[in-house]
Image (cartoon, rainbow, N blue to C red):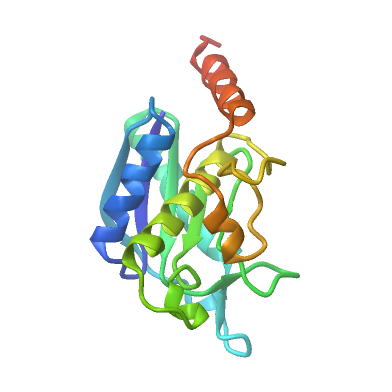
Length: 190
């Protein structure tokens, strides 16, 4: 399996590198590659009334890219799209990210992860930790993990940013065991 990160719109490479490190630290057996390509924000995804992007069209663009990579690499690929745009899903005011569960595509939005968004002082370290946690959370969904009941597990559902802050950048023992089980099953010949 291969994990890739792709920009949706223009995203600072520094944050992409930090996200990459977070993914590799949390999923120790997986390597992650930052792609040079950029997916453009789909114009049809923008909701002018909300001034936000619908998440599903962005996720579909990332999925198309993942399928293309699989044809090239001949291996299962997971692609995480990272955007600075504010995103939402139907029935939600906003979301930090979305993923296929299980699947090949995930996205996160950096828009609401900066402390300044909440009227706080800039804190680059906190911003990058939040981004890494959300990225690992969404990648966990692509492995087939659902939300966890442990509030410290990276797979715990974040209803607001302070729930993200409370989480650790790692899977609890139960979620770790499920990932190992999924890896074992996927490595067996068909």
